[in-house]
Image (cartoon, rainbow, N blue to C red; front, side):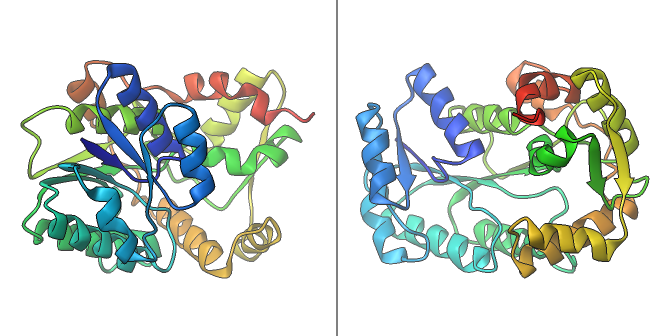
Length: 286
């Protein structure tokens, strides 16, 4: 039995769909009772467990020999995920497949990159079998800017920096593969999309797919930070995003495509055009 954390999120939700379609036994881990009830009504095995309350995790983990571990970036991410790893070890979970980040580094100015490096180190030393997936930046992050894009602008602070953007659906496909196959223990996989491009190229592709001109606005950092705060991001998240895009400008995310997704799953990764076509309506004003 596989325990899937983040079951109501993008990657975890897609993973649940893939496992369900394949007839693989799994249990969805949810923080809220209402989420558990909804998934159960849809015929899914689900259990409540809160990473902020580690005492709730052992009951949810009972009967599971494998765990998919993912949490959203927050200041509490290290405490949450190391606590989950420790709880899994106590109840006898034998393997954890963890979502990390391609830029994980204990010296990184990006807070979640630093957090992932610390958690990865803890997992490797935990005595549990492990597989670590390190995706680059997600194409779905462009949806954060769907409203300005719908108005004809792509606001960013990425300069001319390039990124090998990856679709979260491909990350979920890799997770489903390694969770259900042998031979991936103590493996670390870097996951990229099939191409590397900068924001000017992204704006051009948006223009082509949406059928209207989208202009890339390379904003001053204080303006970009203010926009992030005005759109509901916390000070911590806004600072982290600014630091991450500073890394993009410095070329730290310009990773050559690894093609690991195709090697592991047998199917090529989705390109940016496919992502935009599948989400075209999200970039259109009502």
